[in-house]
Length: 284
Image 1: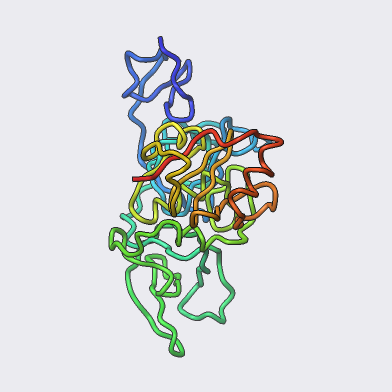
Image 2: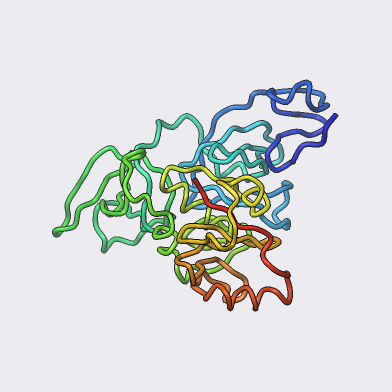
C-alpha cells in the first residue's frame, strides 16, 4: 500500500476513513459523523496528548467529520482544508443548525446581550462562523443576535458567501502585530502559512494549510523577476506575501509577530539560516 500524508488522510491500523478503503490497510472503515467547533479556537494535534505541539487550529463554527471518540478525545478531519488530527471532545458540538455569518475583522468580542458595557463572554477570530437570528440596537450601536442570545457588533460580521473584499493582501494586513504562534490560525496567534490560508479563505479561495503544501500546489509557479502584490515567496518551512514589489508581509519568528519587511533585506537576513528562497507562486 502507498504511504499517504497523515495530515490529509485519516487512517490508522485500527480505523480509516471509508474513502480510503482499498488504498490503506485498516481493521475498520467508517464515514464519520458531522460536528462543529464550539469554542473560539480549537488546537488540532497529531496525537491525543496535550503535551504535543499543535498542527493547526479550527475556529468557532467550522465544520468537521468525527471518525472516533476515546478517552475524551476525537479523531477528526477539518471541513475547510481536510486536515486530520485530534481535538478534545469538549471542543465539539453536534446537531446545530447551519451558520449564517462569518467574522470579518481580526477579532471581535462576543457579548451576553447587545450591550458593549456587559462583560464579554469570549473573543472570536476572523473566519469564525456564527448563526444570526436577529438584530438589536443599544445606545446607537448595532448588533447581530445569535441563536443562543449572545451578540456581536454588526459591522464585524457578514453573511456567508456575500462576497466583499477580494484583496487577500489587504485582509492579511489586518493581522499586523498579531503574535506569531506555531500552528496558529486565528487573530489571537498565527503562523506564516496560516496567515496565507485564512486571508485567502476570506476571499472565497481555498488553500492548503502548511507551507510545503502551499509551495507544492497553490496557484501557479512564477519567476522571481515577475513578483508583484499578492505573490508568495517560499523558503524551506516559511512563506511570505508580497505586499508590493519591495515589501513582504509575514508571520515570522524573528519579530514573533505579523510584520512588514523589506524583501531584499529579508532574503539576506533569512539566508544565513534557511538559505535562499526555494520558489515563488501566484495564487489564482
